[in-house]
Amino acid sequence: MKLPPLLTLATALIASLAGAAPPTPKPPTAEEVKAYVEKLNADLLQLGARQGTAQWVKNTYITDDTERLAADADDAMLAYTAQALRDAQRFQGLKLDPQTARMLFLLRVNNSLLAPNDAKARKELTELGAKMEGLYGKGKYCGKDGKGPCRDLEQLSDVMDQSRDWDALLDAWTGWHAVGAQIRPLYVRFVEVANQGARDNGFANLGDLWRSAYDMPPADFEQDTERIWAQVKPLYEALHCYVRAKLQDVYGKQRIPDGGPIPAHLLGNMWAQEWANIYPLVEPYKGVGNLDITAALKAKGYDPIKLVKRGEAFYLSLGLDKLPETFWQRSMFTKPADREVVCHASAWDVTLHDDLRIKMCIKVNEEDLVTIHHELGHDYYYHAYYRLPALFQNGANDGFHEAIGDAIALSVNPGYYKQVGILDVLPPVNQQALINQQMKDALAKVAFLPFGKDIDQYRWNVFSGKIPTSQLNAGWWAIRLRDQGIAPPVPRTEADFDPGAKYHVPANVPYTRYFLARVLQFQFHRALCRAAGVTGPLYGCSIYGNKEAGRRLEAMLALGASRPWPDALEALTGERKMDGGALLEYFAPLQAWLTEQNKGRRCGW
Ligand code: X8Z
Ligand code: ZN
Image 1 (cartoon, rainbow, N blue to C red):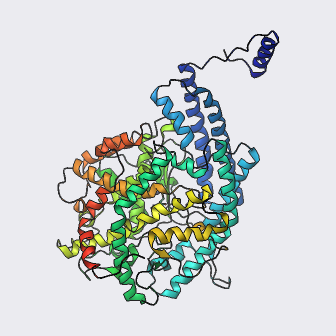
Image 2: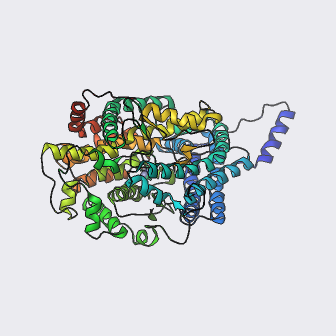
Image 3: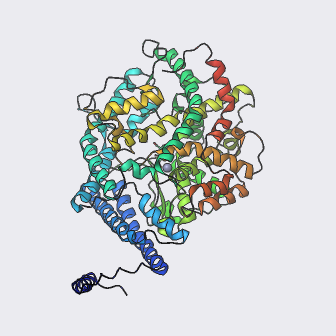
C-alpha cells in the first residue's frame, strides 16, 4: 500500500526519534511499473488530443486567442511530462521488460522541448513558441517603403521560384528575410528558457536532447550524420560546380565569380534548399524529353483536391487503406482568403485516433504534388500505428517519418505519369533523356543534402553556446558557406536573423530528420523495388500497383516506435545503418556525367 506523503514523513520521524533507521521504501514491483506506464499512455493520449486540437485551430486560424489556447495546451503537456519523468526516476535500476523500458526511454527523449522546473518559465516558453510561429505565419513584405502592396510567403515564393531577374529576386528575398529579424529577440529568449528546460531534465542543452532520440549515444549520432554527409558530399560538390557554371552563363561572372559561393537568391527557392525550379537554366540536353509536369497537370485540369486524390490513389494501389471520410472534411487544402493560417505543409492525427488530416496551401504544380505524397506518407504512418500505446505512436526515428512519403514519391516518375495519363507520351529512353531526368531529380534531392544537415548544425551550436547570441546571423552564414557553398546576396548584419525566416526555426521543429530522410528514402525505395521484383536500375523503378511492396512497407509502419530504429530498418531493407549508398546508386549515371562536364572547371568555393 502506498502511504500518503505526510504519513510517511511522520513514520520516518518516529522511527528516527526511536533511534531506528527509517525504513527504506520498497522498490516498486514490475506490476506497479506496468500499471504506471499504462496510466501514462492513457493520460498522454488525452493530453495529446487536447494539444493536437488546440494546435490545429491555431495553425488554421492565427489569432491572439488561438495562440493562447495552443500555448496553454502545450504547457499542460510539458508540465505533465516533467512530472512523469520525475515519477519515473524511482524505476531507475529496476529490471523492466523491454517494452516498458523503451516507453520510459521514449518519454524522456521524444520531445522537442522539456519543461523548466519553474512554472513561470515553462509558461513563457510555450508563449514564445506560439508567438514565433504566429509571426512566421502572418509574415508579409509590403515593399521597401512599407507602403504596399503587401505580399505573403506564397506570393514571394512565386517570385523566387519563377523569376530570373536579379533585382526582383533580391527584393523578394530581402523582403521575406525581414520576417526573421522580427523573430530574433524572441528566439534569443527562447533559447535561454528551452536550454533551462533541457538542463532541468538532465541534458546538457536542447541540442543534446534532440541528439538523444536515435537509440545511440548523442555523440555517436553526431558522428553518424558526418559519416553520411562525407559519403554524399562529392556528388553535391559536383552538382554545385555544374550549376554555378550554368548560372554564370545567365547572370555573369562578375556576379558569380569562379571558385566562389552561389548567391542564395538565384536557386529557385526562398531558402536555396531545393533547386528544381531552375531546371530550365541548367538542362543538360535542351528539349530532350518533356519534364514540365506542372504544365501537364494544368493542361489535364488538375485542381488541389484532384491532386490529393492522385496521391491517395498511389497508396491505394499498394493495398493500403482509404483515407477516412473525415480526412476530406477536416483537412485544409487551400489558403483561406479570410484569415491568417500557417501555410507550411504538415500532416496530422489530431486526436491520435485516426483523425488524419493535411494542412497545405496547395498550388497546382509538380512540387506540391510531391509534397502531397510526402504528407500522405506521414498520415499513413499515423494510420498504421494509431492503435499502439501513445508512447509508441511515433516513427522508428523522426527521419523515418519524413522518408515514407518521399520514398513513395520516388516512384512518381515519368513512367508513372504516363501510366496515369498526366503525360501523353513517355520521354525517350536514351542517355540524354536519362541525364536530363537525373539532373532534375538531383536539383531536388542532392541539392538539399547540406541544407538538411545545416539547420541543426547551426542550432546545435546555438544551443551549446558555440555560436554566441552576438553572432546569431554570422554563425548561420558561416555554416551555409562551409557546407552549401552559398552566400547571402547582400551584406547582412546582426540586426538580421535569417534562420528565423525558415519555418522550422520559429516553429522549433528539429531538422536533421530531413537530412536522414534524404538518404533513408533511397534505402526504402531500393528495398521496395526489390520486394516488387524490379531488377533494373533504381532510377527507373516504380512500385505503383505492387501489393507485396505495400505489405512490406505497412509491416514497418505498424511497428511505430516500438522497436529501436535499426530493427525497423532491417525489417524492410535488411540493413541496420542509415547509409548514402542507395542514393549514390540511384544517381550513378549523373555523377559520372558531372565528372566529365566539370573537367577543367575550378570546382569548390
Ligand atoms: O517541412 C517539410 C514538410 C513538412 S513535414 C513539408 N519539409 C522540409 C521543408 O520544407 O523544409 C519537407 C522537405 C524539407
Ligand atoms: Zn514531413
